[in-house]
Length: 137
Image 1 (cartoon, rainbow, N blue to C red):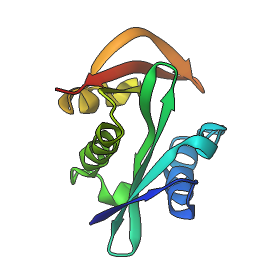
Image 2: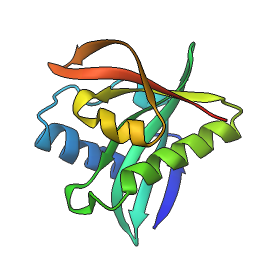
Image 3: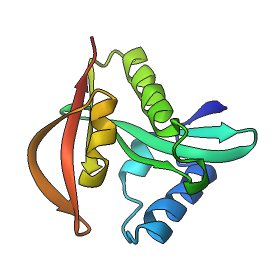
């Protein structure tokens, strides 16, 4: 397994997100302006892209989003591996925390990775989401 960093949305990340968010989960507004400014991480198993996420800097700090793992590779810790890679990237840039907007059904996964919820639950394309943050030691 290897993680590659891209400064423009790569085809591999786009395909993972189409498969996971659009085909599996039914989201329609998957791609946005953040894709043009975000750093994209893609995890490869040999030559096959198996997971992705994006990182960007906003006024309130660093954010990670669009974390997706291909169905046949779930349950192997790859989501946590992608988060760790994003956190390493943010730390290297001098960041002291990272925030995300998670689907509520994934809240326990993020809690296990050290993230704490804050604020009110809201909706993105009709799906409950919660804001979460991890402050680095």
